[in-house]
Image (cartoon, rainbow, N blue to C red; front, side, top):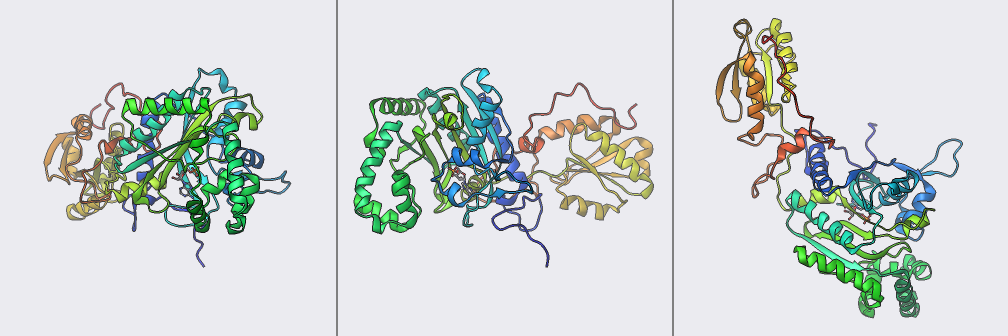
Length: 479
Ligand code: AMP
């Protein structure tokens, strides 16, 4: 039997693939990451990359023994002669804090803003919006507990969704206070739930002893019903003076900047190292699993990992959830344009010449050539399937004259130019957006395309804008 991919994973596919959707489009993923990079690097965040697997101990301590992730969802990697296992990373924060401590990043100017993106692994029950390998964009700030840093982190998350063109996003904001506040809240919760323990799910019975706050986070319907019946007081009622002042300052900045949010007391991050601000971004279009992302302050984490006290705050977006939300809003997702130039030889003997023209044109734009000679009719059909903008048919006469007959497959425009003009022509042409959408885009009817779709295509790996070119390349026939 043919081998298929593991359950809960996706292949990210090239434009034009059968059954392509934004969720599994490699181009849409690259476009989204590039948009996030743009917003985050403009705000001073610097790229960091950590390994995809980490010591099991880092994940257990960094994510928390009482979490579902550690108790049920870890992918553990063993090898012969193993020392106890590695874990495929189930989130980004613990590894980034580890890298900060291990590499002496404290010496860089504080607060240090970092960002990363890549695959994340959780052995969850698979459903729409919930996968076993998914992708996150992650932003972390280390070295400051200033509420201005919290407010900026939230505002940047909102900036990313705006840059993507998403509209129906809600910020739900809460605070989980300082450790003493949380202890007081846990005492209250224990008192409240102990007499109803028989109605709690098995997981929540366990939480009642380990960490009662996590009951509020339970996915069990029975638990949620009990919570509603008991009219549990929110964590916000238990904030101490300092945590309250910090929370009010964060809200003050958000209000001053016009960043909309709603207070949501149900947001809980029950682990010891979480402090104060916690929030989530939600979108109705993603369904029951509506969280696009979430974040929080984790001032106690560095110490738990064996480092000195280091305040930190961060957030993560789920890339697949963002793509589902964009799809639900009917936003057109660019998945990559076809080549700007496609050179097709009309006779076999001119195929190498067509290739040489394409090689030279690549200094300016995406240029491809046909590996076999074709008749004009076949060449046009082939070029259309590839999403080509300009096709150049190359016969012996063109080669002799040093000219090119170009046709724009989107507008029908025809041009004859000298080979020496090709670079300038393509450069000018690459600045104008295609008249029609490329067949490689996902067509949606009710929205205009997002702005600057070509930015993503030029830099699909998210590595930065290409370096400035010093001059035009030599094209064949121009020397
Ligand atoms: P968390 O660390 O659980 O707060 O996750 C951060 C974000 O990652 C969530 O808001 C989701 O957008 C996304 N996410 C979490 N788990 C999954 C999953 N299993 N599949 C897809 N996206 C996920």
